[in-house]
Length: 293
Image (spheres, rainbow, N blue to C red):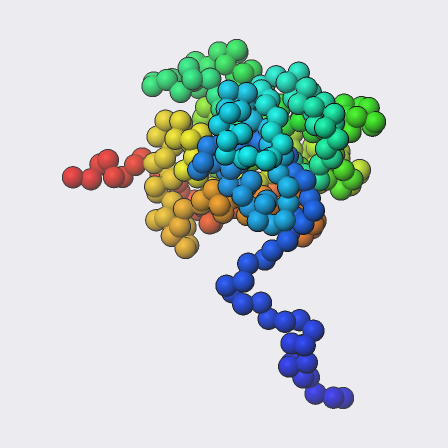
């Protein structure tokens, strides 16, 4: 038998230098992005990453933010939409269809809770039915509404999603699958979001549509800063994870783009980008900087 010639492989599989960026993951793809508007947010970082990878973003934003987003994303299709109401999502999907847009993917990246739930001293037991319904509608049910109406809500002729399209929703499993004291205003909504995502993945997979949940570590975003003491967890992360790094919006955006690309077909429904935080057994939530003298 002849000997193995390792150099022969180099002529077929060129070495990629560590400094080279993998480009073209979304060449020719059109992707609907929600959550765009805040410069440091995940939605905005994803918009930039989609463009850098050859894709074309279509943006949906909260109506009050339309002018800000229009200025930031000039030349991009922008559709205002209130994700807390199914009728708003249905109308936005109808507008997409009317414009002749056909989507290869979509990102659900909206998160908010009633301001009253964030009031100092509030406890989970005091949450009213109205507050819980409001939080669940925006953070969880809206993902189901979005997928349903992008698929034409039973009318195949009104469908906006292309064959083999991909949907991605953002979650934080540390706070949805276990107790993180500072995350309770969002935790129960994210738990339902994950359940909806898993069942959508199973149901729509038979039609060739992939659904993923991206489980991100704590990120310095406007939404995170609105949760009482949540940023204490963010500041504790570098002392806990192997590389000593916080998760950034850009880290998450790259994970989203990977899931939206054809390269992630073999990936499970839930994909994690958290620098290993979820592998840690003890998560301190008290900000140690405030206790040092």
